Length: 245
Ligand SMILES: [Zn+2]
Image (cartoon, rainbow, N blue to C red; front, side):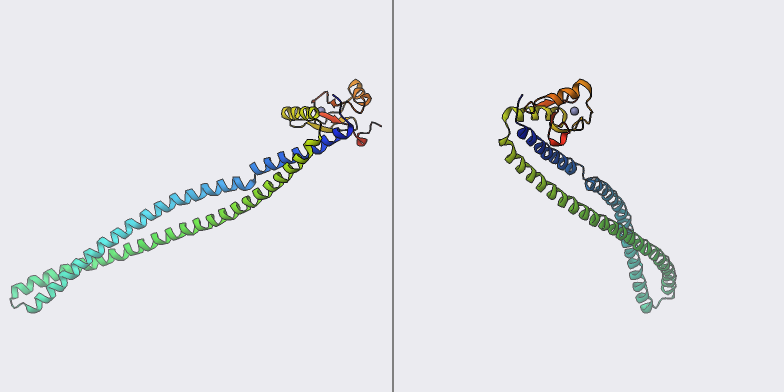
């Protein structure tokens, strides 16, 4: 295949654009923020499960407290009722019975109040445990939002770079002869690099130094000849920088 040295040189610009597109795509797919986001999401899920557990403990304690409070209320009502009866009672027998009942009711009241205090403490502790988990979750969520914003900003930047590179490519390709462009695309599809500079006897694509007949063939080929690397088949572009002259 023949192509003017200028057209061949254009392939180097095209390759640098394509490498740039490849780099931005790779960077967008491998942002360190993405891994950090997954990690934080896992941590938040763990915290959510722990919160469920703590909320369960708190709700159980609250239910128990409610039950004891109603027991206390029942005992208090009975004490009040017996106190009233005691004031009105004239029978010694009734007074004795009421006093004995009042004594046991007061013992029961004291016991219940002691239990109530314990359960109130448990409710308080459980509420604090829930609040702690909530604070932990809020902290993680804040961190996640920060990292996600950072990731989004980078994606926007990379996307803009890709758009710019694609526009550069679109303005460049119509000027390249079709057969040369087709060969370039074919090589690129195979090995990732379509064209590379040939410099100091070395292929810029596979970095292989040519020797002997291979080197001689590249050196002696007319400048209009499209030469491919015998090692990786990339189009090797010879310019003033190639050190052949
Ligand atoms: Zn090569």
